Image (cartoon, rainbow, N blue to C red; front, side):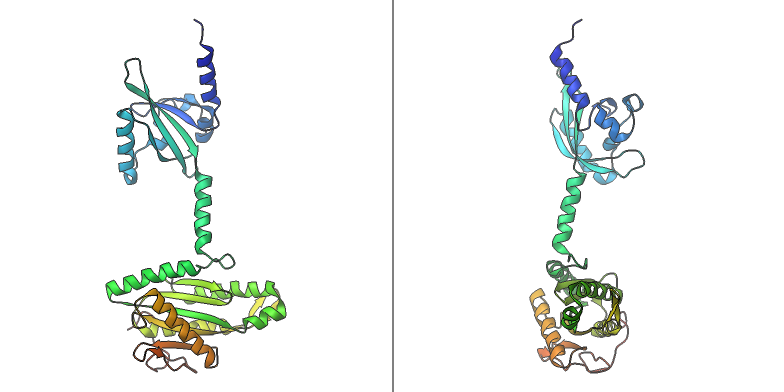
Length: 324
């Protein structure tokens, strides 16, 4: 019996195609697979024939997806979507899959061709782009757009649960002098060290951001009392007062901190940003290396603390962030 040359070429093309392909029956058991699929799973066709491929194993978390897939192809339609496949002992990675029904001589969908395209590199690139859009390139901290998003969420939660949160604005004192004297390389190293110290000063649930240059902000999520923000500000001042060794040079900076307690200092992102910023500039004008809190009762910045740091009520350093 002569073989139709076109059929031979088609079979050869599918077998040698760069993208993984396989054919399964109505029970999802493998009937055929090309070389690319064999390389993907690390097994020859003879070893996987008759087995249900991993990408078609029903996952409880994606139950609706698989229900839609099987319903579509059993009714003669083509399904397009994302499935996960993995080589032996490797983590699954995403593939865009096109599942097409193959009809027998009676017009029934007896088998299904699964054509796969690896989108893991594209997915990683998109995730990296998203990360870059919301994080500072130098320090890895959240950036200004991310701050606004996190702050909006914290304010919304505080208003719903009738709790407090806080925004701290931090501007370094003496950074320009270090940068001018030792150069941008040391300046960048200092900013990275400052970022790490700020992260050590807060809880895991809090968010540290770099806004621009030597300006930072911290969102304290769900604090028990305004005193908690004062404790954190004190800790930051103490941590930043310690000398830093950058590229073999010992440098020292301070910080001016503005505190806005939410919702006392505003129940919107704009109000919180404005009032924390005003408090920070008041700390600068009052001698630097200190913190000021926005006084919601007066509608202005309260008297800045000398030493020790005081809270909005003028009391000395307060109990820990979890205390009332």
